[in-house]
Amino acid sequence: MSVAGTPTAPPASGAASGAAPAVSFENARTAGIRLSASMAASMRATALRAQGRTVFDLSLGEPDFNTPEPIVQAALDAMQAGLTHYTGPSGLAVLKEAIIRKFARENGLTYKADEIAIGVGAKQILFDLFMGSLNPDDSVLIPAPFWLSYRDMVEYNGGQAVLLPCGAETNFKLSPERLAAAITPQTRWLMLNNPSNPSGAVYTRAELEGLGAVLERHPQVCIMSDEIYEHIRFEGVEVCSFPKACPALKDRTLVVNGVSKAYAMTGWRLGYAAGPAALIRVLNKLESQTTTCPSSISQVAAAAALDGPQDFLATAQAAYTRRRALVLEALAQTELRVVPPDGAFYVFPECSAYIGRQTPDGRTIGDDIALADYLLDEGGVAVVPGQAFGVGNYLRLSFATSEENLRTALAAMVACLSTLKKG
Ligand SMILES: Cc1ncc(COP(=O)(O)O)c(C=O)c1O
Image (cartoon, rainbow, N blue to C red; front, side, top):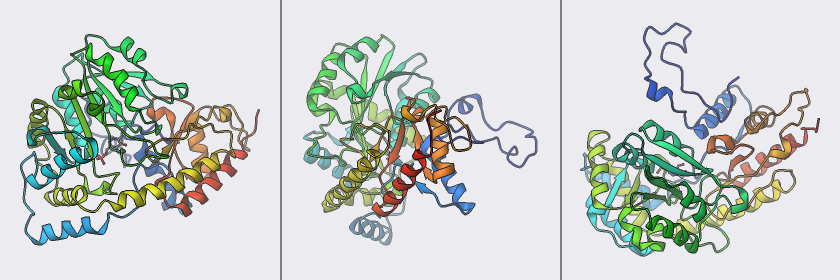
């Protein structure tokens, strides 16, 4: 049985049909990475649905809202106006200027045009970052739990991913002491994700300053600050951009962001970043040889999102706030233990109370992967096991789905968990 959350690379072409493949289409480097675990969990949910099962998908990290109308209209206008050609890898001026204004307005940061990169999603920028900057033996510090693509991207591009487990006792945040102890002469990047996927943790400005004080002593270490969830935050929590908290480190920080999560634009594939011009040139060079540029139409739409009316952010925020409350209420009826998230649209409860329990047909739930499988197979609820994010005995539930779906999914999950008995 395939296991949710521990996807293996897809079989080489030919194997799926049962015929022995004459050649391997997958090289060793690609064989060494995983299919994105959240995508794998969602694909499994889709496959079960195709078999006629009712499945509630709490595995995917994308807003369920449609892209706001003014953004869609800007894209339609761009197409009508013939903005349907390649752009340079660094993008249309109208987008770069909108990004520069966004950083000034929302983050209090000043960047010039040659300090801005765009990509086919933040994902492309992150991949290009490692492809373009890592040398063999370079290491990258990744506080765990982490967004599952970081590790594979680093390893695929020849770097050593050094995982730094950060437990619930520090609200899953990296401490300055932990950081100081982990840095070596080989450390090239520190990956920060603020707010965090999957934990929802948000660093305070003072906490960022604490990390910055350590990093100032290690000029070989650059910082990647992934702030893609900055607009999804709860109960008065502020999100401070890393270079705003640590201006002395701005010239070795890449701030990564995008329109996917904030403006419900995941399918438009448009991410952006700001950092030192020399690094931006590396990213542009790689883009010129790979995707050339993100879609010109998406670029215009992203400029409209950043420059246009911002009321959607508050509407989405209010919806996520209600959904977060629903999830926390449901989790309180279970033995899952959760630190309420300060940002992003995930909860990351600890599930060790259920490990070792028996299913009604006498199987033992051995770990979080088995628990996620059980929830999907028996309860029809798709979640991602913590191991995909670098820590065992946790589950990630996304609440980027309608309240109606969420209510039904949570009720199914609570009922399913209650069938697990102590051995
Ligand atoms: C932490 C984090 N960074 C980056 C991304 C990639 O976003 P994009 O859609 O811009 O590629 C995601 C998507 O799930 C994410 O969770």
